[in-house]
Length: 458
Image (cartoon, rainbow, N blue to C red; front, top):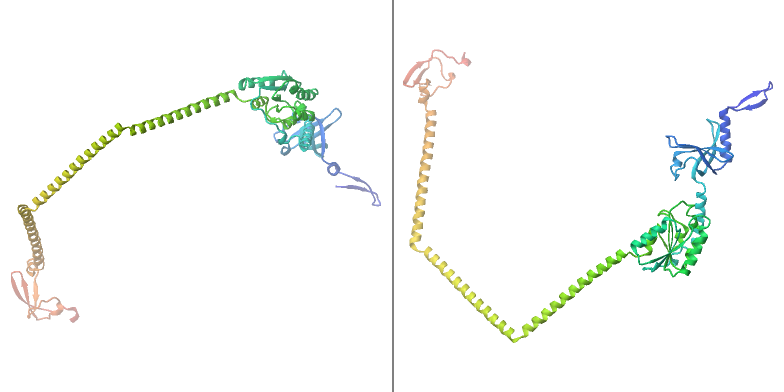
């Protein structure tokens, strides 16, 4: 907030800022007037706290600059930097108000020098590609069976031993001609160009291997020189380029007739495999033997067919065939006669059986057995009917006994009837003075009604 000291007349004399306000003003000035910058220097005081952010100082011989690279940006940096590395960074200059320090918020980081080399590499690659130096139509075929192979590499490097061991293993019949050159440093590119020009003139080689082992971009830079690429393309014989490891790619690789990922792979691509040849020879021998067996078997079958035809055309053979035919006809005649006789015998037996089945004695025996069976069934039915009738009689008797009045009287009951002989069933049916008859189990009694007990007449 602005604080203004005023004169007695009210005119402002000076403007005073707080520290925070001045820091904010400086930050705004820096953001508005300084764009994103590229800065090169040496890493110092490099710190990686648990938050994942990077804090470091970028310095040279005369000054230093505090920097911060936050986790979202530094996770893309490969390879990871270390204390003392010379790096190239891009970012925005700002003010860290809490400490009052200028610092750079870094958005991108790369090793110093490598970035420039990569840009130079890409520019040369595009220019030569636009020129047509890498066109597939310019690529020459690699000889299938090279008799003499030229090798351009360092005589003391590991690449020459890799190539020698690979050729000894795969194709020892080929002759190897070594043209030693420097493969690193300022003298390397001119030496490689000279070797590509002179080796095919001095010795009649069929193919040239241009190889070296792995290294940094700076170590392999001689293979990215324009002169080397044009010499590869102008070489009198096909060139296989195997420089560095599988991930390394040079301008010479694009210009070569064939690119190999490693020196060992270059030797493998340049030669056939003796083991593969032996395998193919063995396969051919096997196929030839199988074909010979097939032809011999076919010839034997044709010979047997001709011999059979000759046998069939001979008179003795025909006579033998007629005799055999006669024997077969005789056997068929005997078999037919035997079958007919067997069928006749079978029919005779069936007729005899039917005749025996139709005689009166048999029918009488069957009728007697049926009569016995019916008698037994009749007797059983009579017994069942008698039993059922006896059961019905017993039930009726029990029922009659249950409803017999005498049986009721025997249990101590009596039957009361009026003078007309009608059974008195209610007190309403009699009056005082009526003479009634009381029937008991062993006789009857005459009784007179003393009083009228019907409630309705009281």
